[in-house]
Length: 359
Figure 1 (cartoon, helix red, strand yellow):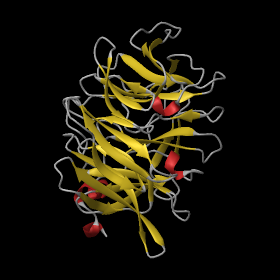
Figure 2 (spheres, rainbow, N blue to C red; figure 1 turned 90 degrees about the vertical axis):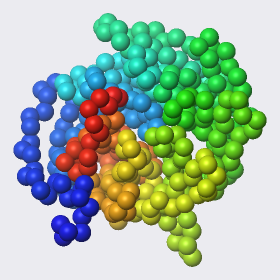
Figure 3 (cartoon, rainbow, N blue to C red; figure 1 turned 135 degrees about the vertical axis):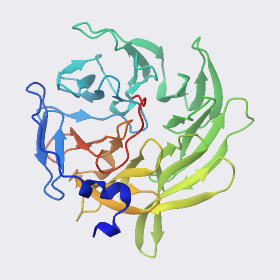
Figure 4 (tube, rainbow, N blue to C red; figure 1 turned 90 degrees about the horizontal axis):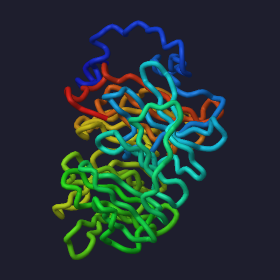
């Protein structure tokens, strides 16, 4: 059996399982053993309220501060919170009236938290540790989506138009007739992915960049969960492929160089997924009714390993994601009643990122 496992996944069998360490006496952390794999899983949030992760493409885990940003309705309305992953202590960061849970996103320097409250794009300074949260600053209105590039440039979709904000807050239009999603390209911050909705499960992925004449169509059909490669030269996503009467979920990739789309790997019916820091390993949530699991998939070997169960009522909402250093996987599930956040340590299963990786 060991010979059939890829080296990075077999690492767990070459070491003894670590003994359970005591959890913090404060906070809401609860640790249990997954019944399928006997992996230690930690529930990070209480079941007395509903808690949600931001979109997997957003920056919301800080390795530097060992903290995680999420949203919760524990104080009556959905608002952004920060949890210290060492102590379990919680801090409310702002007040929301119509908070879009998946929109929470840290800027690259981890000073500002950006989020959508209804149609307004807001930001709040999270470096100030006062007892009460700071009032959020309104940056723009009529916004349906935004994305922050590595150099801090903000892209947003406003009034159905993809726009590029400069340091003064003025906007330049890059594309029109856009959908509800945009995703800044890594690197220079000049390009951005955006979607156009065709039908309930049908959409198009387009690429637009400042200084270009027109957007470029990258993929269309029953596609979802787009992620840029680390160098920003290709896009990885999920595609549902119908074969006879069976629909299979595959991870596909398309480059900006015009080489066309190709299949990276079939999956065990992933409903959502995300890559690690270099795109060598994927974590996915299976929509299989018989095996509703969180799964690791090694890109090169195209082999899967079950990490734990999720048993969520909607697999696409599990949205598993690696921490920036790839030492942990975070996901959400309503298996125990209300949506809650969970964490699994994977540093004995896959190679973590090198030193210096920040959230």
